[in-house]
Amino acid sequence: MALHGDSCGEFDTKSPADKLFTSFTGDINSTFDIISNEKITEYVGWEKRTVTLSMSGNLVSDSYKKFKATITITPKAFEADGSRVLWTVEFEKIRHDVEDPVWIIDSLINYLKEIDGILIYSLF
Image (cartoon, rainbow, N blue to C red; front, side):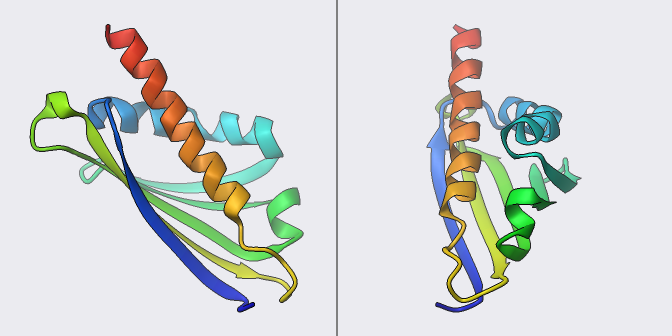
């Protein structure tokens, strides 16, 4: 296994892009502190609805020298159709025997989908 890696993907949501982005960026530190006691450094680009997270802490530092996720939320052609989430993750493992950070990626995706579900429920 290579020490450096990246992963990317996308998925659709039903929530408007602005509401999803605001909800995601407004509470991310407290959510991931509770989950894993990780420190999150973030850059938020409001104009393009992009957030970049660099994580460090007990769980990340034990396995990865670097973990950086960039998430962009864009509206679909018609706002009523929801939005699209694009994500890219870059990482560097400390050893060859360390697994790819699939569990962190899954946590980010599931968190975004939970927010989407909560927002949709509150809109109707």
